[in-house]
Structures are given as C-alpha cells and as structure tokens.
Amino acid sequence: MTTNQSFVARREAAVSRGISAGMPFYIDRAENAEMWDVEGKRFIDFAGGIAVLNTGHRHPKVMEAVKAQLDRFTHTCAMVTPYDSFVELAEKLNALVPGPTPKKTAFFTTGAEAVENAVKVARAATGRPGVVAFSGGFHGRTLLTMGLTGKVVPYKVGFGPFPAEIFHVPFPNAYRGISEAESLKALDNLFKSDVDPARVAAIIIEPVQGEGGFNIASPSFLQSLRAVCDKHGIVMIVDEIQTGFARTGKMFAFEHAGIEPDLVTMAKSLAGGFPLSALTGKAALMDAPIPGGLGGTYAGSPLATTAALAVINVIEEEKLVERSEQLGERIAGRFRTMAQRNSLSVIGDVRNLGAMVAMELVTDRETKEPAADLTKALVAKAAEKGLILLSCGTYANVIRILVPLTASDALVDEGLDIIERSLEELVSA
Image (cartoon, rainbow, N blue to C red; front, side, top):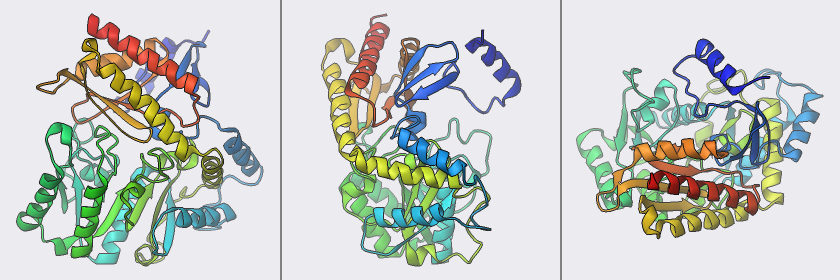
C-alpha cells in the first residue's frame, strides 16, 4: 500500500530543501473544497492552493472546457501562432477591470511574472527606474519580486543583493500601531530623503496583504495613494494576485475604494488551478513596450486561457462575488464569537474583506505579543483533525482562510468547528 511516509522519505531524497512542504501527507484526489490523501483520509480545504481555487477543485464547467481544448491543441506559443481564447480572455479582462480608461492585457504564467512585467511596463512608459513597495508585502520569488517583497524570512535569506532603485514604506496596520497618516508621511519622507518622486516609475500595493497577514488597505488609503501617483506622474500598480476574482466581495479588491489603478496584476484564481497570470492596464501604458518586449514561451497557455474563460463564467453564474460576502460574514463572525470567550483570549484580532479572513493569535492581548508557536501548532493540530489551514504574517502568527467560494455552509462550519476544537485543546494544554 502507498503511504504518506514513503513519499516523505522519497521527497527528502529527491527535492530541494528550499521548496517547503507544509503538510506531511500526499494528495490523491480532490473535489470542490475536499481532498483525499494517498491513504484515503479526507481533508477539508481552507487553503485553496493558496488562493488559487475560488471556484473549487475541478469545477465541472472548468474541467469540461479544458477537456474540449485538450482535443484541439495544448500548446503553440501565442507569440508564434496565436489562438482564439487568448484574444477572448484579454477582451474579457479589459471589460472586467473597472474604470473609464481603455484597457489592454498581456498574459504570463506566474504571479511573479505579472509583477515583473508591470514594473517593465511602468519603466518603459515613464522612463524612470524607481519602484516603491510596502513592508509586509509579497510579490513573488524572482530576484526583482523578492526585492519588492517586504518580508525577509524565508524569502530573502541568502539571496541578495537585490535590484537597485527599490524602496519600502510601512503598510498601515492599525492593530500594530501604524496609522494611515504615518504610512503616508513615511512615503513623503522617502521622497524627501531617499528618492526624487520624479525618478519613481511605480508604486505597487496589495489591497489586502496576503503573506503579510491579511492587512487591509482602507478605501481612503488607496484613494490617497492614487492622488500621490497622479501628483507625481507615478504609475499605480495594484497587485490583485491573491485578492482577485471574487475573494473580497468584489471582483477585484480595489473596487472597494472606487479608484482606477494604472496597472493590475492577476494570477492564482484567474484560471481555477491552471498556471496563468495577467497584467491588465491602461492601453497607453500597456503599449509602451516595443513589440517582443513582453511575453513568454508558455504565457497564456491555451489550456489556461480556456479555463479562465470558464472560471469567469462560473463566478458570474454562481454569483460568487455575493457568496464571498456571505462566507466572510460567516467565518469572521464565528472567529469574533470565539474571541469573546475568556478561554480563547489568544485571539487578538479578527479582520476580513469579504471571504479573505484572518485571525491573529497573541500570547497577551495587552502587549499583543505574537503567538507564532501557537499558530504553527494550530495548523498542525487542524491537519490531524482533517482540515488544511494556512498561516501567514510578518510575525508568523496569523491564520488565513482561503476556502473555495463554492464550499457549502455545512462544510465551512465543519472546518470552523475543527479550528475551534483545536485551538481550545492547545490553549488548555
């Protein structure tokens, strides 16, 4: 019989140590928000492949579309011999991204590629080198995107030096005592002490920080950044790789602020589990690079673009934007109820935008000392009970929920019950 342990040993012998594995079991099959390992054990999936599966594992309509594409062709390289779904998806994204300015789109394979190409477009359009990012942000694992990322461990350790002309300012975080005014003041100080804003090509921000701990940029903060960019001729890049495609109660999280970004990066849930990323932005900016300046051998794979068209249809037909709001209220409400109990005073903060929900664990609510060990133990305990969880945060003390939006209320409640029981057991011990 195939066992998880046999794969653990083989993996240690064959796979680079640098690629971590969060769980000690190996998945055999998956449907919607459930998975089964090679030993037949069932798991509820609250991770969604790190925000990739807003439409769930193997959504029937997505699988049907991809199977039909498999019978046509699987790869031609869109830069050599293009195809219909590439153009159709670009048209769809241009229409989906809000704002009055005409849009254009480019496709890539990973989120990091989308971010790198956003910077390339901004530099080509402005003739400037500088990029401003935020502490706690995560934008990828390539050299440039690691430079933009505002978290050292594990992403930057041993990999420097990083590209020049990258600057960081604090992300507003009310729970940790960083106000919006302080963040904006830090940006102003940066322009006075480190880099002339006339040398800054772009400011990049996640509307809700993913790896950083699900810290939420308020509408007023995003509006202020839009004003700063307009004042100095800086390109505003909104990184929607984790927040996009109905996760936050809007198709894109920046819609809560009523702004129009210059460029928007997308990936993860765009294609329902198939590797695809996109950069959609104002047409004049997107046309700044010369022909051949953007692209990639696998960029806009026909299987992925076909899947993405089906994903967008599913989001619309199944009203997953509205579902995200309902799920967010259900999950965050449950966490807030738990936090009111004296026995669970380790829950320091609960925050959410739609179904992007976080629970921050602390050793003491007064000092807000991060409870990283407890967070790690909760992820492990939940896994023992059949629930897949993810942690995150600069201090590694945040539980983040990324359950597929297609999960039933009953399944979500079952997962929440496991979290509550697991946390009770750990605290009482």
